[in-house]
Length: 544
Ligand SMILES: *[C@@H]1O[C@H](CO)[C@@H](O)[C@H](O)[C@H]1NC(C)=O
Ligand SMILES: *[C@@H]1O[C@H](CO)[C@@H](O)[C@H](O)[C@H]1NC(C)=O
Ligand SMILES: *[C@@H]1O[C@H](CO)[C@@H](O)[C@H](O)[C@H]1NC(C)=O
Ligand SMILES: *[C@@H]1O[C@H](CO)[C@@H](O)[C@H](O)[C@H]1NC(C)=O
Ligand SMILES: *[C@@H]1O[C@H](CO)[C@@H](O)[C@H](O)[C@H]1NC(C)=O
Ligand SMILES: *[C@@H]1O[C@H](CO)[C@@H](O)[C@H](O)[C@H]1NC(C)=O
Ligand SMILES: *[C@@H]1O[C@H](CO)[C@@H](O)[C@H](O)[C@H]1NC(C)=O
Ligand SMILES: *[C@@H]1O[C@H](CO)[C@@H](O)[C@H](O)[C@H]1NC(C)=O
Ligand SMILES: *[C@@H]1O[C@H](CO)[C@@H](O)[C@H](O)[C@H]1NC(C)=O
Ligand SMILES: *[C@@H]1O[C@H](CO)[C@@H](O)[C@H](O)[C@H]1NC(C)=O
Ligand SMILES: *[C@@H]1O[C@H](CO)[C@@H](O)[C@H](O)[C@H]1NC(C)=O
Image (cartoon, rainbow, N blue to C red; front, side):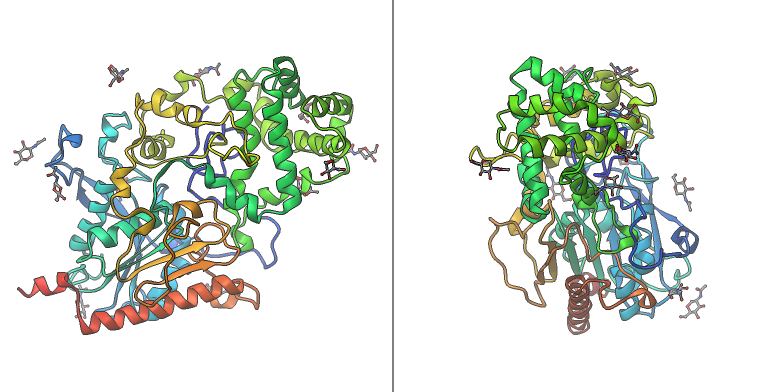
């Protein structure tokens, strides 16, 4: 069983030691509009590869031994609206297979932009993800070429060398036409860096929920959830967290607490605490489009704020639960809290615990991050290693409870700390030093800034405190040249997906998303006017 998962919605049987930046809105329920019966985008846009050097930096010792070889960097594109001289919109697909981003080519923001500006929309895979794999395995040694700077150089190389199939006799590189990058989340930080590092190739960039500040102890992940989730749910979650942390020092009681969830055999307290925190990771998988929404978070809240016992099978545990609630120090609230706790037990059992234990697996094999052996495989199918490696070497973002200020109740147990969340660094990669966040923070962190670099974010995004929208970041003005927009109520890069014109309704997309996208259309058109007046230096060099 794979111990770690890259994407936030891990599915039932994986231990959730950290909530990934990724997004996987795979649950198609609770629709307010008819289910999209869209043509499968993989049938519309065939995949292509560009051969790209594995090692762009023969001058840097960290890449020794160097490589002169190339690898196939995968991309998809739509040129059906293209007119000569039009812009190229490159959506950087980030830490997942580019296939997951194909719907954005069909009807996301970049599809809309390409249509309105007679441009080309491209989905570009990130090295090591999907099929764009430069090495024959994913051992620590082979992963040495997985750095943000190498991946940025891939995109620069792409922009200078691409010949789009079918457009071979036209000049459509960054030397000829304006290139504009778009990305959300890690990819959002990535395209912001791209604009700063390769301004002569990338004429503009839109960084959406871009985590431009790498932070090792990212306890703030849970703060937007604390502030924006239904408050009754938040209060109950805080009480559950107190149950864990207050019972933990009382080993006899803590064992009974684990047994309440059917997890008496789960050896490590932090594995147990981490499992109980897993539902919070579903907050970022919410989307305004019902067809892309993950309803898990609100199902969790609905269950744990119900004062009616939902799962009959837990009724027999009521006395035991009440005793534990008292042992944790709760007095007048204990009756209400006991029912809610039993609902949590039933819900977590149904959605997460039983789907693995019911297969005859042990609690440790289902939910422990402490099993060294489980990290040893490194063939190319072990794609969980990829984002983990980036986390261990450059990004951090350990979503701890331990980092929560002492004067606040933590949203997740304080037993979830950096040592626990970095077990995979040690066990999978033999990395015991902290990530070198300066490798990415040198591009500007919270203060990253460049003309024609747009910063878009979500007010309720758990990643907000790692973006230029963070509470502590320097305030910015919103201008056409440096667009800066916080989408009210939004979670993670809510401007990235879109609807066909025949699917929109007065409330879909919701007004804050619709107006952000409308503004994006408008400032891109302004940027393109500037290109006409002052083509980029890259274009000028063509004529030197
Ligand atoms: C692109 O490269 C991948 C990985 O080598 C390969 O599986 C795929 O067939 C290639 N696709 C095309 C269109 O050449
Ligand atoms: C290696 O070359 C790049 C430019 O290609 C430069 O930015 C970097 O500073 C160089 N590194 C060293 C160690 O000289
Ligand atoms: C790469 O090519 C250069 C120039 O041809 C050569 O000096 C170097 O030894 C090669 N490196 C590897 C790792 O093959
Ligand atoms: C080459 O470009 C011209 C227009 O400039 C077009 O008519 C022709 O079909 C193109 N040929 C190919 C092979 O794409
Ligand atoms: C979990 O669900 C299974 C199957 O319904 C049931 O047998 C088991 O008792 C439940 N465990 C708990 C702790 O509720
Ligand atoms: C409880 O959770 C289940 C499964 O996720 C969900 O179907 C149900 O609607 C939830 N109940 C409430 C009251 O929210
Ligand atoms: C749960 O118990 C209640 C009351 O005893 C009963 O009405 C209901 O049918 C039971 N539900 C299930 C799923 O067994
Ligand atoms: C329990 O007591 C505390 C402090 O006295 C109070 O703030 C809280 O509202 C009470 N809760 C309930 C459910 O009565
Ligand atoms: C540890 O992981 C290995 C490899 O995945 C597995 O065979 C073994 O059963 C696991 N041990 C425990 C205690 O889960
Ligand atoms: C792990 O790294 C240490 C320090 O770099 C090294 O001495 C040791 O040999 C490595 N162990 C393995 C199994 O690679
Ligand atoms: C809505 O528009 C899309 C894109 O133009 C089209 O593929 C689809 O068939 C349309 N759906 C309906 C129900 O007309």
